[in-house]
Amino acid sequence: MPTDLLTGPWALVVMSLLVLGDAFLVVVPGEIAVTALGAVASSVGSPPLWAVITCAGTAAAAGDAACYLIGRTVGTARWRWMRAPRVRQALEWARRRLDGGTAAVLFTARFVPFARLAINLVAGASRIHAGRYLCLVTVAAFGWAVYQASVGAIVATLIPGGPVVAVVVSVVIALALGAVIDLISRRVRR
Image (cartoon, rainbow, N blue to C red; front, side, top):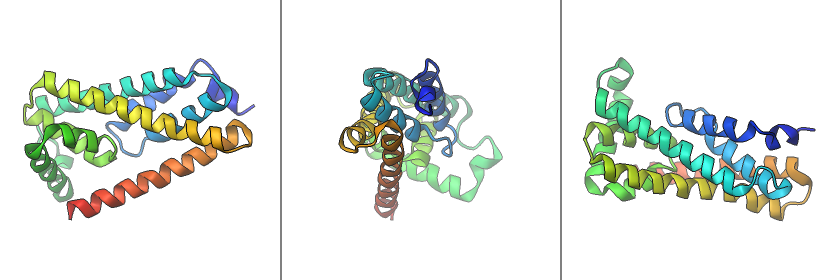
């Protein structure tokens, strides 16, 4: 059965690795994994929703903290890809946003994949106080995990058809919500 893979002992580990990888590579489907497991948790009961949220939040905070450490130790211009015009533009945008309010930016960036990477690298390079950064990014990561898992859980509760249907519909809704957030963030940047 297809849900056996999503309810087995490795489901949370794989989801956590995807979320961690998503901190560095925006093409890794971390959000989709959390939403899918949220749907499975609600429709099947395994893994428990609290475990999905805990693992996703922990992995997201660890990934963001790792990006912060990279920014703090390497900076934002060391590698060639960091000097590309579009990347420089994104990093400058992140620097301006961080100057305007660290907490609001960290919370918002948690929901926008490339912005999240840029913000966390710049936060480290700007030497934002590590204790304050870790507290804020942890709260943001767990808020994001609750949101992502809840999308899946709510859809699974409202849509009949079992866990497979719930996962598919949840992923489509999560992708649509992500597209809306991306659209809004692009308009705000302009």
